[in-house]
Image (cartoon, rainbow, N blue to C red):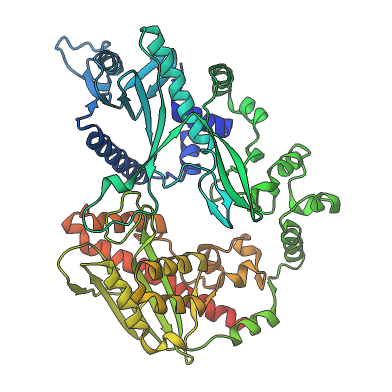
Length: 589
């Protein structure tokens, strides 16, 4: 029997095939959720737990009590099939019956705050985050590791998160309330009174010690209210409906869910083809190139792709003109470029546009790249929840004669101020001038150092990045947080060119890039001698985890030096890769 949990229910309500993968093909499910290693999963769980811990502290402060911990614990069990006469304990499993009984007893005793109360109703299992006694009954509290829970609504020209609670969160608390209330009714206990969601205040900025009261935001669900907003210069009343799903609807969904999750893959595919939603025909990194599933287009075409799939119109080269016209979001141009490249087996190069772009560059060109950490509970001063905090940069200053200087700095933790020069032996990326250092005390010192490295070139250089939205957004954040640095970082934005546009704007189109503008797809085509393969740290998410561990002192001392070097090499590779792509494109003109 499959145990139906709130996370499985939420996945099913999002897209049934997602829940089917979770039960029947966990490897694919983890890839879709971008949980590709145990380390990544542990990192995500630790971050979520940090938020839950802060909500617990908040509730204990608010109610002046200690929460009763009802988290199911593992206990050792004896293998009943063992021939060993000794009472040998051979494995461990969650002691759910104890947790369920302890939860019911705590409710009968009106314990003020319950942490991880556990309920089982048939095949449905719920571990709630918190329940709080309000004097008459219990309120249900759901902790979210989010800095928002509501949809955006336009108000006086701004998008504000003041609309209805996102449906996935409603589905979560609906399932919980359904199971809990059914169990409480079986034991003649009062029903859930109110439902609250606690999440993070995205405007909170940490300054010295963490202010939990300012960090945590409570919001009541399961109600309907009216709000007034200004739209088109008029005051408008909007209905905000946060009511949870009716029990009869949940039971209908659970019946359908039980049936679907037990289907074999062929049956499951017949009901929900993979191309049916934003989880577009998931094939990992190896989507079938030259087909409707490998186009990398916007999910607004998902239903159309599914129709083509059922008609077996799969290969792009076999599509009729009318079938091509059925696409939107510019995919017709994409397909036309593909067909042209397939006929000629040559890349498409817009020489005029490339010359126009490169003529506008001012030397020395500053190629730069940031590495960041982003956590829900701020760990550094002058940071907000989920703020992408710059803790590493790489900068290649490229002169018109092709000579270069490189600067690479990394921030590793708050503490006594120091700088530590790093020497990397046998570095294949080394250029004429190298300066790599570790810095501690405040990440603002790292930002000041970058401006010092740019020096007098700030107002005359062109700054080149790959995917400018990311770096530009970080520079805007820096300008808001540190007014004394604002002019410098906003100047960088004003003088920035996104080298990715050479590919994404169609100035250079090469089928060997598999229609991707990712630097990791473009680099091996234009600069085959450079590769991220074999690097100890070769991906941004791995770099982020490594930086987080360094800053929070989770890195073993014997590993520290090598991990710092690996991080420097990774960021170094990103900026030098841009330089080499720049040179390769320049040769085409």
